Amino acid sequence: MPKKRAKRQLIREVLVYCEGKTEKHYIDGLRQWARTLDLSARVKIKPVDIKGGGYGAILNMLKKEPDSNCVARVVLLDFDRYRGVQGEDAIFNQLVAYSKASMRKAVPCILVVSNASFEHALCFHDTNYNESSAVSFLLANWGYRNLDDCKADDRIWEKAHAGDRDHVHIAERMRDRKLVLTNEIEVSRSKIDIKLKDVRFDVDCEHILGTNLGDLFKVLCLS
Image (cartoon, rainbow, N blue to C red):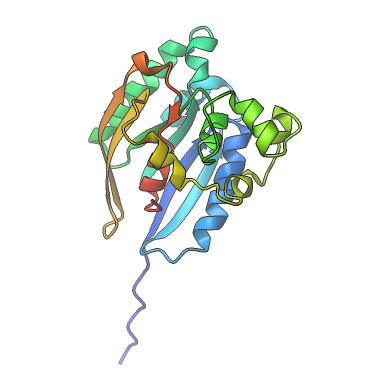
C-alpha cells in the first residue's frame, strides 16, 4: 500500500517594498525574528529594495512586477517627500489610487506610511520618545553618531527591540490617533488570506506624527 504524502504546509509570502536602507535593514531583522516564532502559518518575508528613486520608482516597480507569487505586497513610505519634493504629491496620490484598486484583487497592495519618516517609526518603538526631533532622539538615546550611522546599521531591528523597546508600543501610541493613511485589513490565519477592505488618505493630518507600521505586523499575523 503506497505511503500517504505528508500534508503540504502552506507558506505565506509577503513582498515588502523598502524605500531606503534603514527600512531594508529593519525588514531583514524582522525576517530573522519571525523564523524563531512558532506560527500557525509559516511566514516568508521577501524584501524588495527600491534603492531610492522616490515614489515614482515604487509605483513603476509595482506596475512592472507580477504579484502572483505572494499573498500581499506591502510598501514602506516616508511621507516627508509629499511636500518636500516637487511633484511627489501627485505620485503619492497615484500610489493611494493603486492601493485602492487592489482591494478588488486577490493580492492587495498595502501602503505603510511613516510621517514624517521611518526614523519616526523607529522612535515610536521607544516609550521614552516625546515626539521631538526623531534624529536628535536617536542620536541622544540610541547611541548613533549621526543619521548616516543609523541608516547604515544592519542591526537596526535589534536596536529597536533592545531593553524595553518593542514594535508593540507602536499600536499603543497610534490607537485613536489620526494618521495621514489608514487601512482596514482583514486577515484569515487558516486560509492564509489577506483582504484590503478600505484605504483612507487624509492630507489634513500631515502635521500629526505617526505611522501605520502596525499594519505590516497584522498582515504577517505577528500582532
